[in-house]
Image (tube, rainbow, N blue to C red):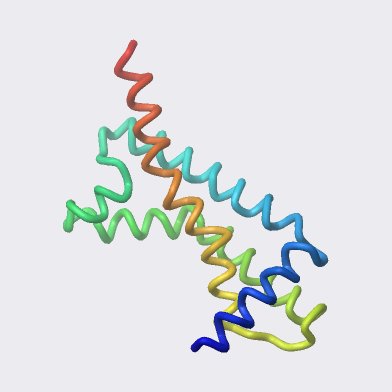
Length: 129
């Protein structure tokens, strides 16, 4: 397991400076766009912010996760494919777990971080009116 993380971080350094490095900016920005869009949708419905909703509202958990996949699933798949292409070009091999971890880092993490705050900010400004 230690070997996996050492290789992952070494390869991540190559990914940041190698070909296709633009995706480390582009894919999180697309995920951010979908997070803001989902936050706006949540605010209009009066829903709880995303992460507290996942934790507290067990009956809504499945719906929230399904909605999240709908929002960023394409970004995740694109990030996964881009990482596999990168690995084939630069490393001449494929590390599937590393590709999945990179895709999660580029698609889901930004989405999960920003969906709740987007809901809160939009709700704050809507309540001021």
